[in-house]
Length: 123
Image (cartoon, rainbow, N blue to C red; front, side):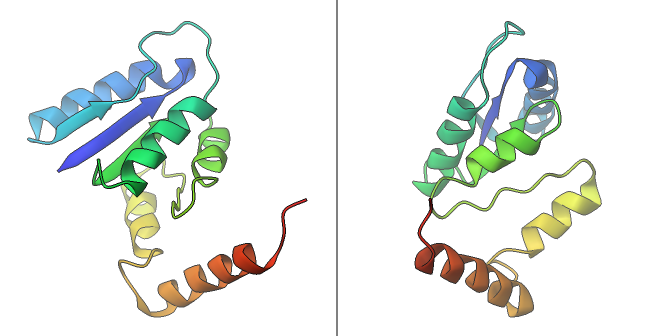
């Protein structure tokens, strides 16, 4: 599986650990940066990872920052992307279920969110 990884400076070291683990499990990693602990802003990394998933360049994306909040918000601005914060395995599994992949009530809920986005102009 191709997995795009991205992080700001606060998530850099964790991104590098995640990268090693995923590579050891046979995944192809697309490292979208950052490449150091030097202070940087998170939106560009969120956008790069999210666009690579949206465009089919990567199968999945993983983003890492300090709290996860800002980078997830930025990722969710990319059309068609649904990013969630997961600090443990259960949350990651639930985030995957609450997407069109699991269908059922989750697809209905995602549909409600998409409909709201489509019909409500951003101010």
